[in-house]
Image (cartoon, rainbow, N blue to C red; front, side):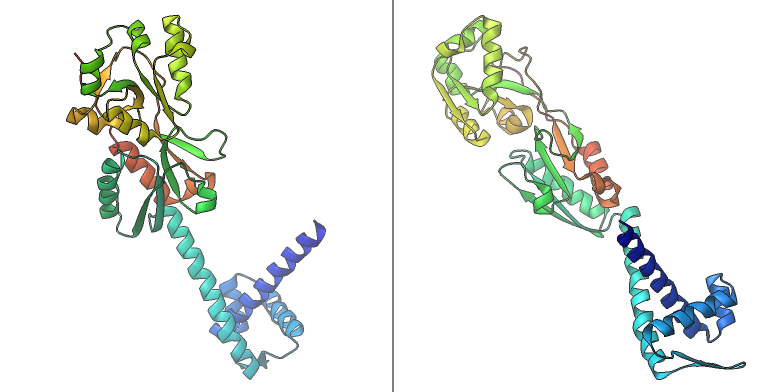
Amino acid sequence: MQRNAHSFLRMADRYAEILSFVKIAESGSLSEAARRLDLSLAATSRRLSQLESRLGVMLVRRNSRHMTLTQEGQIFYEKAGQALSDIDQAENVVMRNATEPVGALRVVTTLHSGRSRLAPLFQHYATLHPEVAVHLEAAGQAANIVETGHDIAICFDPPPDSGLIMKRLADNPRMLCASPEYLSRRGVPRTIEDLASHDRIVIGGGQDMWRAIDMDMGRDNSRASRVLSTNDGELARLWALNGAGIVIKSLWAVSDDLEEGRLQTVLPAVALPESPIVALYLPAQGDSAKVRSCLDFLARHLKPAEATPAAA
């Protein structure tokens, strides 16, 4: 710890010496350099002497009236001056990124049907912020943005204990739904007890939601009707569209199907856990103007989908 502290202090001393030398070279005067640095003449002169001692060369020829750079001094001034200029420019760029939306913004989303809503929103955001280069990437499952380098992940059901900050963007209720063909063939459930005689489509952890429904019915779910299960939400949606049974899906995942009549809601009064649309980002990214502005924009414009009437 002491060694690290000593190294840091020595680096700070080296920076101060170089900065003082560059100011001396630019002003052509020790006294003027001291004024620009808000230092005493003695302190400025001491920094120059320390730098020359460390480098082992004379950088400045000086007498009582004149001061000029040596050949080594001119070379060092050109290199050191450019380095300090680069540091200033780097600081300005980074500070601008903290206050203005600029630079590349990499976003990944697992929303399937929701992509049709996200695409025009990000196009609008890019129009409002022309200095932000938006890259929107689709993924089958939630990405580890620490590893992938994305700034924001937009998804349903965020992973637990991810160490990321979560911002809720829109509500997303779950519902029971099935195709009109299935409901015509098997009948429309009128009560929760009617579900006992229907086929079901289960997605991953959705078994827990079906188990809760079975408990409401006072029924052992091990005696369920025909069950198809998968870990893929899109595959479950396709099964439902093909009349395989009743599925529990979030509104955002099937809103287009409901609007077009390809699916119909079943027993809309049955309360199911929500699956809100959220944005995930690293804690440090909250200080980035492009991330802040994008999240605020999405929260304002990402309107929830609307459910259609239940099956008659």
